[in-house]
Length: 383
Image (cartoon, rainbow, N blue to C red):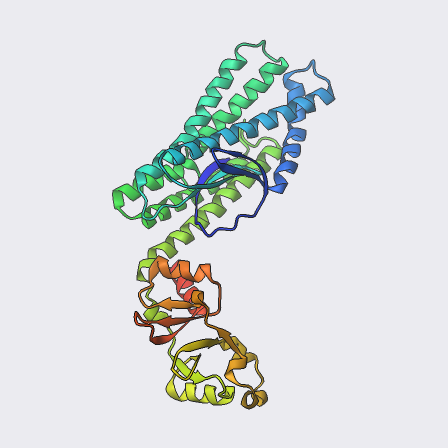
């Protein structure tokens, strides 16, 4: 299967072996992809021999390998169509990933973006597969039935037509699901609601694919390999649709994410103050965080709640807070005007357990604990 997906700029660049570039975009193959190619070729060998009885056993498997490579070549062309359209619209594409079940073009998500642009990028995928399928039928017609060229052209054509039809189904993460998402986004003016609806349709499609695999109607999953393949496709669709739903729920709550509501009250303390005394003062003041400050009141360190908890009570009077403090690097300072996506991006760029929160003049407002932010996002995802 094939899809195109949104990719945040912060996403890790790893996850595969780069095998080339096209239109300036890296092509990455997951390591297991090479094994899947061999497995598909091995399973398709008997079918080739049935279609072309004149071939010997070894030749049949060689032809099956050629078919498999051409099939993934078609998948790559499908993804290139997504990339070409995205590039033509001025969008950024991070990479193309060849996966066991197909491929994905990682198009960097636009904010706020436009539904029409997403629709155009999505729709060219099934169209390109349809064109390749029709072209394959035309090439097959040039050869005598059940000859090697006919078998390869025919099977590649059928595979592309199936990919075109399947990818056009209106459920995420398929291309048709992204077209549906763009349509709902346009109608409701709410991107998150469109994602939720298209994600649930994707889940329904996954269930439908499993039903097809289990019932094994003629032409779909009547073999064990075919049934397993359909079940893997269903798992792929369900997993990615579920991820899209979760992301939509989080995205929906981001505009309401207020750093002031999440900020813990902090107690400014001198560097040489014993931990036990700092903790006592914080409790009396109702503070849940410690910030080390210099003589001028400028923050110089953050004391982790976990570090204080890990220090035995009997040692706390003999250890100063500076011994537990982490220097206040620029990435650990957040402003009270950072809310929503800006806040989430800042935290993701500099992973830490605590962040110093200051107002627009640099005065200490408190400390944001990453665990509080995560809890707020998880609560939003459960609603």
